[in-house]
Length: 521
Image: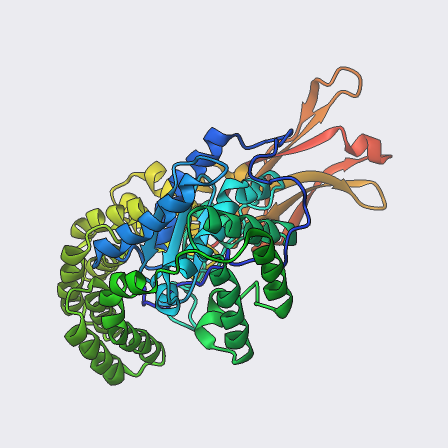
């Protein structure tokens, strides 16, 4: 089985900007929540545990301009100083061109590189920052968890694989919770609260809250023009509207205009980022070309990007992906090695290196790359390949653990992991995969019925039928081993027990135990 893990644009998440002015008379940040199922310490822990994997899943941190991240942090610190709830706020810039921002429980906030291109002043940055800060401070994400929205184990499509391929939903394990946290939608009231109190924070921190109004007016114009990158990001779930602009104007009338805009300092602090915007535009176009299998165009565009910004690890990583597409694994490894040296703490070149080495038969060398990738962001390919390595060593329990994690991915890799796990575990624990019970026909003839709950056909299921006393509940009789032939995936089969019963109640006295089974050849 040949493995690939080609790059596509990472998912766009909106935790975004609100819709209307809140009519709630109680400050949502300071009010008491009587039935908190998620405590403050749990809330902070959830944000802390999921903050890094969520950033990894969107392209990792933007590390080439530490001063830019420090600047964003400083703006956040000004707002945090006047906020109603003190949290361990943290702010990061993510290396993604999609204009977006999100907040996690416990005060973990992220801005995409692409959003910073679109803002024109520190006050506009504060408008978005204040909004996200209220989401965190008012426990909007934590309250969503209390409603059970985030704890259902649903898969979130993240688009890590090539477009129109089977590589979707590849994030697995605990990291899925983080993806759910930043992709869940807030209700109308939560969005309204964030607009209202975010503007109040702006005013208290010395910024002109007029920026929150003008920014929304700009967003309305962009939405009318259907600017595609905003549609992928901030406009995906919360499109701007004239009603929202009107609500923010009403808030402005309450808090009063006036304050710092910080246009010059914002231009200065984002100058390095803006100078390389062309490189990332070429890079994004190169990903699109690779997904369209236009290799020559992809290479040309990546070369253009590298000329503008030679320090960017993602550009080397994409050259590796291009080489992988051409089955040039050794060449790909050289590019991934460069990417890892440039940015050691980003998962993608690690998992790609592991896959390339695995495909080359260098499995012992692949293992540390796969493990490191899973430490940064657990994925189905990482766990599936580690499962195969463990299986080849004879470590069946270790292999099963990896396969079971990979199986939580709704992808071809996940399905393959399920099949591998069944093949290993079914002979040892057949009852774990085969449901069994007694059933009678209209004439009262008793049958032992089994259902194959696996995606793999099974054969020669051996069952034993046990009868219990109606009064004491003790075993009073049991059959010899009965053989049931082939059972297709998801189907049933049965065998006659040789007993007749007179009622459904009597059927309930019989239990069917699966003793053994084997996979169909």
